[in-house]
Amino acid sequence: MYFKNLANISSAFKLDPAQSSHIATVLRLKEGDIIELFDGEGLSCEG
Image (cartoon, rainbow, N blue to C red):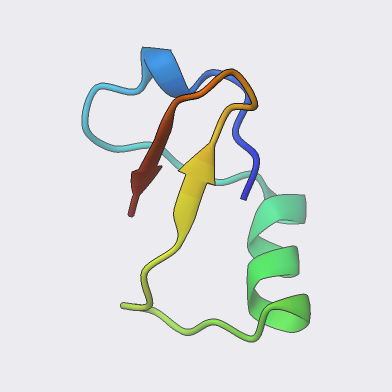
């Protein structure tokens, strides 16, 4: 999942409603599932 300011994340963040909806309805992920975040500039992490 694309996340614009990945370098600025310290430990936790909240998804906005559109991101949450996309994860739940399109990707059909549930609480506890692991997603990969990336910024398009080479940084990525799992959460």
